[in-house]
Image (cartoon, rainbow, N blue to C red; front, top):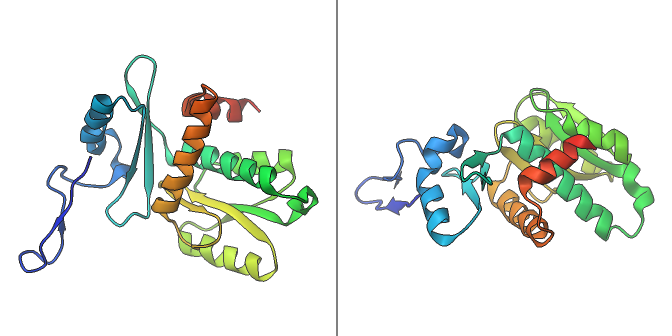
Length: 199
């Protein structure tokens, strides 16, 4: 767990004294204290945002006791699957699937393209950077389309269209919901990811 302290009179900024570089994009090394806290509390999943909360990392304890930190592409697959599944569950008229879009950057995994081909929604690639995905999402929304999800391999996610940028807070909330759903079905994130790839 990362702790933050702020004293504007003293340092004009935030300090993260428990890690050298408080960015979960750096992997396991910055999550050491989170893993220790999870072990003490009996938790099997760790969610971590970076200091400005625009990125999200997720780690899951595996059967052998080690922690798996999911890549941005793996989380893109999981969150994309979950957001689409939720849309299917709540959409009264599923014929509108042709108006549904998901986006990712050109350097990211093409897993959403495969899901889109199977399910019938649209997938588009943009140039690297969320400004491109946000701008494309705005264009689609202006055409009365639905943009359910966008992601970039650098652990940035846009879940829905309320915020047309990467947002680690909303992604964490949605990831928590997904994790809870899977746990109720005795399924792990790793198992669900394998199921997505096998479909």
